[in-house]
Length: 106
Image 1 (cartoon, rainbow, N blue to C red):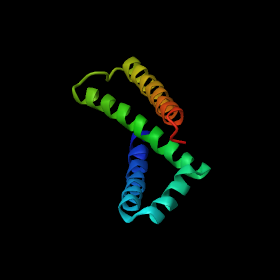
Image 2 (image 1 turned 30 degrees about the vertical axis):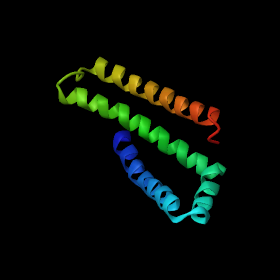
Image 3 (image 1 turned 90 degrees about the horizontal axis):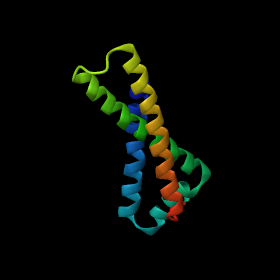
Image 4 (image 1 turned 45 degrees about the horizontal axis):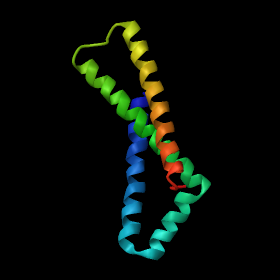
Protein backbone atom coordinates (compact mmCIF):
# COMPACT_ATOMS: atom_id res chain seq x y z
CA UNK A 1 0.00 0.00 0.00
CA UNK A 2 2.78 2.44 0.90
CA UNK A 3 4.45 1.79 -2.45
CA UNK A 4 1.28 2.91 -4.24
CA UNK A 5 0.80 5.88 -1.91
CA UNK A 6 4.34 7.10 -2.58
CA UNK A 7 3.72 6.65 -6.30
CA UNK A 8 0.66 8.90 -6.04
CA UNK A 9 2.65 11.41 -3.98
CA UNK A 10 5.36 11.44 -6.66
CA UNK A 11 2.72 12.10 -9.31
CA UNK A 12 1.68 15.20 -7.36
CA UNK A 13 5.36 16.03 -6.90
CA UNK A 14 5.65 16.18 -10.68
CA UNK A 15 3.46 19.29 -10.53
CA UNK A 16 6.11 20.86 -8.30
CA UNK A 17 8.80 20.04 -10.85
CA UNK A 18 6.61 21.54 -13.58
CA UNK A 19 6.14 24.66 -11.44
CA UNK A 20 9.91 24.94 -11.00
CA UNK A 21 10.54 24.53 -14.75
CA UNK A 22 7.84 27.09 -15.57
CA UNK A 23 9.32 29.51 -13.03
CA UNK A 24 12.81 29.12 -14.53
CA UNK A 25 11.49 29.66 -18.05
CA UNK A 26 9.28 32.62 -17.10
CA UNK A 27 11.98 34.79 -15.63
CA UNK A 28 13.03 36.45 -12.42
CA UNK A 29 9.72 37.46 -10.86
CA UNK A 30 8.15 34.06 -11.35
CA UNK A 31 11.26 32.31 -10.05
CA UNK A 32 11.35 34.56 -6.97
CA UNK A 33 7.83 33.38 -6.11
CA UNK A 34 8.92 29.76 -6.43
CA UNK A 35 12.12 30.36 -4.47
CA UNK A 36 10.18 32.08 -1.68
CA UNK A 37 7.96 29.01 -1.33
CA UNK A 38 10.88 26.59 -1.59
CA UNK A 39 12.77 28.42 1.14
CA UNK A 40 9.82 28.58 3.54
CA UNK A 41 9.11 25.98 6.21
CA UNK A 42 6.04 24.58 4.38
CA UNK A 43 8.10 24.41 1.18
CA UNK A 44 10.89 22.52 2.89
CA UNK A 45 8.32 20.15 4.40
CA UNK A 46 6.91 19.46 0.94
CA UNK A 47 10.38 18.85 -0.47
CA UNK A 48 11.28 16.62 2.46
CA UNK A 49 8.11 14.56 1.92
CA UNK A 50 8.84 14.33 -1.80
CA UNK A 51 12.42 13.17 -1.22
CA UNK A 52 11.27 10.60 1.34
CA UNK A 53 8.59 9.33 -1.06
CA UNK A 54 11.12 9.13 -3.88
CA UNK A 55 13.63 7.22 -1.75
CA UNK A 56 11.07 4.74 -0.45
CA UNK A 57 9.48 4.24 -3.86
CA UNK A 58 12.87 3.64 -5.47
CA UNK A 59 14.04 1.03 -2.98
CA UNK A 60 10.67 -0.68 -2.78
CA UNK A 61 10.57 -0.78 -6.58
CA UNK A 62 13.88 -2.65 -6.52
CA UNK A 63 12.32 -5.01 -3.97
CA UNK A 64 9.40 -5.59 -6.34
CA UNK A 65 11.81 -6.32 -9.18
CA UNK A 66 13.41 -9.01 -7.02
CA UNK A 67 9.95 -10.43 -6.37
CA UNK A 68 9.26 -10.42 -10.12
CA UNK A 69 12.26 -12.68 -10.56
CA UNK A 70 10.76 -15.12 -8.07
CA UNK A 71 13.02 -14.33 -5.12
CA UNK A 72 12.12 -13.36 -1.59
CA UNK A 73 8.59 -14.71 -1.25
CA UNK A 74 9.14 -16.59 2.00
CA UNK A 75 7.97 -14.74 5.10
CA UNK A 76 11.41 -14.17 6.69
CA UNK A 77 12.69 -12.70 3.41
CA UNK A 78 9.63 -10.46 3.09
CA UNK A 79 10.22 -9.01 6.55
CA UNK A 80 13.96 -8.67 6.02
CA UNK A 81 13.55 -6.90 2.68
CA UNK A 82 10.83 -4.67 4.14
CA UNK A 83 13.06 -3.53 6.99
CA UNK A 84 15.94 -3.07 4.55
CA UNK A 85 13.80 -0.86 2.31
CA UNK A 86 12.69 1.25 5.28
CA UNK A 87 16.26 1.64 6.54
CA UNK A 88 17.63 2.54 3.11
CA UNK A 89 14.84 5.05 2.55
CA UNK A 90 15.54 6.74 5.87
CA UNK A 91 19.31 6.79 5.29
CA UNK A 92 19.08 8.09 1.74
CA UNK A 93 16.57 10.79 2.68
CA UNK A 94 18.85 11.87 5.51
CA UNK A 95 21.83 11.92 3.15
CA UNK A 96 19.94 13.97 0.56
CA UNK A 97 19.04 16.58 3.16
CA UNK A 98 22.45 16.55 4.79
CA UNK A 99 24.18 17.31 1.50
CA UNK A 100 21.48 19.79 0.42
CA UNK A 101 21.74 21.77 3.64
CA UNK A 102 25.53 21.51 3.86
CA UNK A 103 25.85 22.74 0.28
CA UNK A 104 24.06 25.99 1.05
CA UNK A 105 20.83 25.01 -0.69
CA UNK A 106 18.71 25.98 2.32
